[in-house]
Length: 185
Ligand SMILES: Cc1cc2nc3c(=O)[nH]c(=O)nc-3n(C[C@H](O)[C@H](O)[C@H](O)COP(=O)(O)O)c2cc1C
Image (tube, rainbow, N blue to C red; front, top):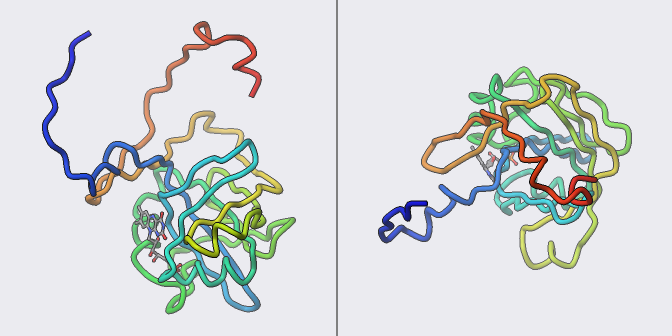
């Protein structure tokens, strides 16, 4: 296999390659306030644990801290423009559900609403508070998950920085190469 020739690359742009994606919409609520924000910096930390990095300047940070709950919602291609716009304004100034025509669907386990237009939604409770005291990193336990049956392989949105997204595309299988016990989950 060929070895691509590499050149020096700015460290502050490695997100172009490593940004995990898919971009998600995080909704929070506290008393009569609610917020929704776009989030690209998140990762699985176990089968039912998710870490999300929510900057302190975001209104969602305050509501997440106070309520210790959120919903994580999975937008797909038709929501791409809204995903950007939701990330460009603050819930401290505007109700983004109203502004962007999003449906706030009541969740079962948490006060924060689910975003009805998203392909999937996960109801989350704050799991770990020590890290959040020092970093804007929230570790959530997913209490309940909701997902649409189709499309089977949704076209999720993966942010690459510089205003560019990759939309999930071709699906390939390598099941035959896996050890059977690795396919259980
Ligand atoms: C593609 C994209 C990815 C983003 N990823 C994050 C993120 O991982 N963490 C974060 O705190 N803000 C992220 N933002 C910025 C927030 O969505 C933005 O600051 C938002 O306005 C916060 O809304 P709020 O004040 O209602 O909480 C992202 C924005 C975009 C457009």
